[in-house]
Amino acid sequence: MAEKVMVIVGAGPGIGLSTAKKFGKEGYAIALVARNEDKLLEYVDELEELDIEAEAFHANAHSNESLKTAIHYAKEVYGRIDILMYNAYTFRQGPPSELDPNDLAADLQVDAVGALASVQAALPHLEEGSTILLTGGVLGVKPMKNFASVSVGKAAMRILAMTLHQELKSKGIYVGTLTINGFVKKDTHFSPDNIAERMYEMAQKRDGAEWNFDRE
Image 1 (tube, rainbow, N blue to C red):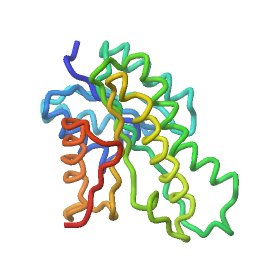
Image 2 (cartoon, one colour):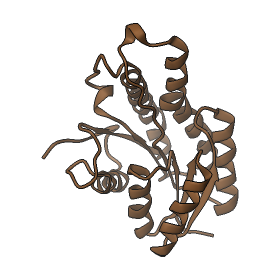
Image 3 (cartoon, rainbow, N blue to C red):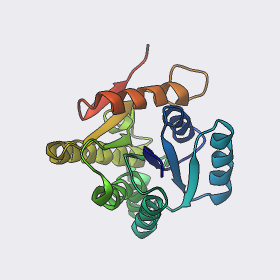
């Protein structure tokens, strides 16, 4: 059994994979959770080439049961969960007056409700000293009319993180959200690798419900 295990929900080629590499190099086994099984297997191969222990777990953030099943399975495989990271999100464009309510509800499921379902699935397996990380964004603090759905989703996720932090800190479980105050792009200050470094710093310091990743 691995001594330290991190579960990443919403494991994609950007922040998710970079965070997996950073924590993996620090000794964590990585459970990657996402809906694209072929891509997940590619990420596992990439991590294993770096001598990082990793496994793929298929789930869709549109389905709470799917998320719960994947997280429980990860616990069965590894025997423990030390860090849960929720990184799933949507990116629908358009102003609120043109936003279909059904689309907003579907996006909110991925952006915030899925995060709650993932946390609730992991909680029975989290011991004192465990960590929950949620990937935030500037639109949750400074909404933009042409990204109404994303703004609502990130705002909801931010509040969820803060209330979870208030609830779980007495149990010795750290909850933090990283608000990324820019658009993520490789080879810039807002690169996935730089954000992963900040995520690791959060997990180490375990201080404060919200951290910010700002411009230089």
